[in-house]
Image 1 (cartoon, one colour):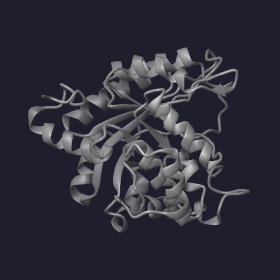
Image 2 (cartoon, one colour):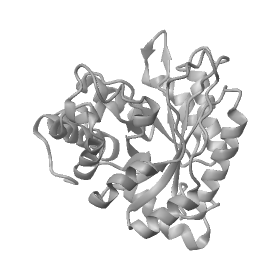
Image 3 (cartoon, one colour):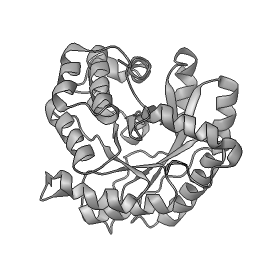
Length: 307
């Protein structure tokens, strides 16, 4: 039986490569633990330098040291960063983010538009000559922006081209702009999930739905149902208490029916060894169906990779 996660736009001669990329990235679980490393552009240096952030996080190599030693599905970042450090971190499974924008212009002043930097063909060519393990590409769309038409067109083309080469396609879909009143509205987030499915994405990274500022994992069900065969990844957000984060992640998967997470700050805003343990704990919950208690044990005591 053909697995439902094999899209029909993957050519016959690329099916094996796509399935290998999918199986390796999800550990055979169908769930993806995405270590988000695209924030050097998205948030500039706000997430990497300041009070309660370890000094080592200001060095981009901190991200690669974590990704090379921790259990992760893919490490998502820009191609330029991979090019600068990839020779020293060939074991890392990469997902190349093909568009990014800074946070300097407030959304209240101008609707967001994040244009594509490079083509999928550039990534394929880079993977061929570098020998690095590049498993997919990613792209952010801002529905609600007056520029959404341009981003939707680029995203649709990117997904089709990624699948043509046997690569995974992950979309970040965040409704933003002057016409978006509540980015965490569950119904709006479900709409964003449906857009990702119409674009053909394998996974979509979404905001976490809230009502009255509070998280309820049951609120995710509208989005995960609307996403159909596209796996929903919840964003990690700002760093919070470890036990609270892991409990919410467990609920997102087992109550809200998400199929993974995209986590950055809750991992990299820690000293290296602690960051590795946190990534391992997140991976255990996401891919290995570990309990929150087991994940906290991993965080406290550590574990060997792929244990």
